[in-house]
Image (cartoon, rainbow, N blue to C red; front, side, top):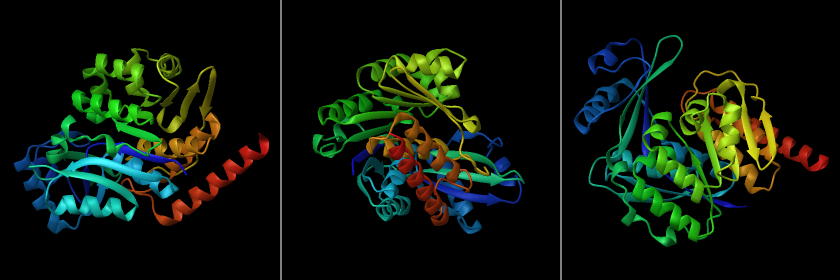
Length: 334
């Protein structure tokens, strides 16, 4: 089985289901928004939430992808920075539970967290994010031995704002012979790092994952199918996800539209992260491009059926059965 290493913001998701919007109003958090908060506000919100009974899950885009790949059976590693505190220890033990070999460096600030408020009948999510120690990761922290022995290296787009760090990371991954993938993560990150991101993809990245708004920000093209073609000119494999409509995948002249896998969506958090894990897992097995997209689609359909980013055991069992069948059918038809 091939191996995968990820780098990203080591964040713990703190999930709270609220009866009303009082807390959102108290901390000036517009419903449905994602706000960055400072340490004092981040600590204050967390202390307010604690007595309400909250759910803690190690999160962060790349960390979600890596944990998912580990459950598939890939040897998995992760590089990030945490504080020497309760949430840092929680993040570390959560990763260990999934079999992820973490290189978690210690920062001066408290550990990063994403406080997720779920409100109303339609379970609308509002985020208050404090990055904390996660932001302290610097190029000098990275050592060549962290990358040795890994087949894939996966980057979350949120880190691209730290351009020197990402440039150092891809150089080391490239020297180690890794296949490099990036999840664009957010259209505003793409817009504010446009030239750097194009240079990075052009020179180092093999596989690009983008959603519709990110592909539009990257290529300046409204049509996701046209954006796919444009991204594919720069890398080996381009993936453009179009939400509940499905996804497009392209390698060379080969293009497929991947239908969405059936599922009852209640929370879209983590869908892109798990899609990437499924795609990379299938790719590591040498599966055809279409099957890689379908495996991504299967696992993404499971995560949207649960609140948060972690799929429960019954759904994992289902997913593994469906994926096994898909892979066997593919082998029989080839």
